[in-house]
Structures are given as C-alpha cells and as structure tokens.
Image 1 (spheres, rainbow, N blue to C red):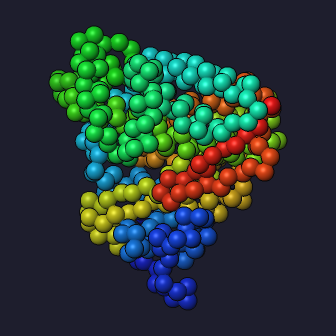
Image 2 (image 1 turned 180 degrees about the horizontal axis):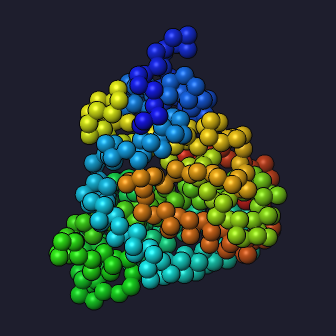
Image 3 (image 1 turned 90 degrees about the vertical axis):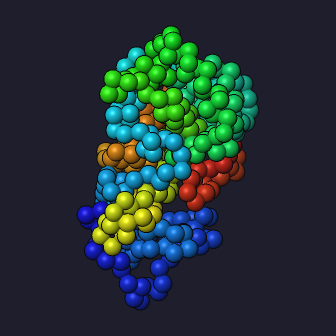
Length: 373
C-alpha cells in the first residue's frame, strides 16, 4: 500500500472515525465511503475489526501486495495452492475448456431466457441471475447438468469463491475426480486431475478445493454481479438500446457495472508482516465499493456510463489473488444479456419497480421485477 499516507489520519475536526458497523451503512454505504476517502484513507475500524482502505490507488495496491493474503478459513487456491496451481486454472480457461464453457453458458442462457419469452412479468434475479452462473460452473467442470440445482443450493448456504465450504462438496466431487483421473476429458476438472506439479499430480484435496472455488465463483458472487449489471442497463434504456444494436459494447458495459456496483464491496486480507502502520496479523478491508467511485480516479464516478473508456474494475480481484472465475463471470454476463434481449426484446422495468441494492459485504438488488411484453 505504497500510496497510503504513513500514519492513520487523526479524528481532528471530523470527529471519531466512522465504522462499517453503523446501521445506516448497509442501507447506503456511499456517504461513509466518501467520508473515508476524504478524511480517513487508512483507518482502524475497531467495531468491524479491520483496517479500512478506501481510495482506488490504495485498494489496488493492497490487492497486489504479497504481504496481504487472503484469510485462511476455506480451501481455495489462495489458501492451499501456490501460483502454479492458480496458473493451471487460468491455462484451462485459455484452452479447450474455454470454448466448452462459452458454448455451455450460451446454451444455458438461451434456455433460461426462452422460459421468460411468453411471460408478462418476471423476477430476473430468481428466474435468471441465480441459475445461469451455477449452470455455467457445472458445465465448466463437466458435471451433469442435473446437479445444477444442488450446486445452486450450496452457493446459497455457504459455498463461495472466498473460501466458504459446503460439507457435502468433497463427497460430491470425489467420484468425479476419480473418473477424470482414470479417463480424462477436455473439461476443467479433467485438466486439474491430469495436471502434474513437481512430477506429481495435484492431491485430491487441492483438486476439490479448486473445483469448489469455481463452483462458488459461479454462484452467488456472479449472480449478484449479473443482477447489478441488468439493473444498471434497465435504468438506462438508451444505453441498453445501444448495447442491443452493438453487442461489442457489452464487455465495456459489464466492466462499468463492476466498477460502479461490484458484487463484493469488501474484500478482506491478512497482513503476514507489518505494512506501514498496519501490524502483522491484522485484517485489512479493501473497500471495492468505495474504490470504484473514487473521484480522484473516475470522472463523475456515481454515474453509470456503458461507454466509459477506462472503468478499471477491481471487482474480481487484482494481483496474485484475482478470482479464477473472472472469465466465467464475463461470459455469463455477455451471453446472458444477449439471450435475454433475443428472447425478450422489449425488456423493461415493471411499473413502479426499481429495487435498491442490499447488503454490506456482498451487495446487489434482491429482486429485478421486469415487464417481458
């Protein structure tokens, strides 16, 4: 965090440092973010139990600092695997599994979108956003499509890309791992099972952890990001029309949504050694929700602009702990929007509807009531 001032700002005339635990923050965190950026760029939040970093440059530096590591409660790549293991995931997405993933996401998106074509109204969160990412993750790993509902349930009850772990996951994956070791295919699970590090295959626990990370990344976090993406475009019919006419704009519109409304507003890191005034062992809270609206980095930062040339998103991480599901999330957004606009060309908000985002750590609209025809 080289750009952070060397000491914590004193309260001074601004009063005591604010806290993420303030009840008003969950309803609307942005007033707090502005106060932190302007007066407390690095501050210890005792009620929350972490040092808060809120400016874009500082958050980016913190995410890229090797002295700040992901906390250890799960068995994700950041927790139990080194850079070599993470590179295996990235390599898989660049190979045959990438094409299979893209095709699987596209097929699933059209199936889900077609179910809405004849409806008068629908809730896109419940009927589209939550199901599409889980199905995409299942397809990436080459698991049976009928297991999508099970994965979807796990993503809602503990499994996530930050280390949450579902107790049934290992038992679920074990027979598939054994089959892929004996008869590898072209899916991501096969790539992980066939990979060798130091002349030896990855242990089953590592393969299960990596697979669980992808399943979690294809669940709640990506579903939230997709919900915010669709909400932003529904809020701006002119921009939605432009993306419909020019699909090549979708990637930029997605990146802009991640900047303005990331699915994770708070990403935690643990200091393995002192970092400036932050002591070893302390927790650092990287406020992605604040960084994305830093006026020192972005012009008119509260405005959603699908044509912004440099949205600089941090929503799926940066540096050595970047989320391996980034490509999966992007494909879900691009194919999901394309399928919805093809099946429901007159997609718009239902009368009187515009649900506000909810949540402190993870944040997105809980519902998206839309008129389909």
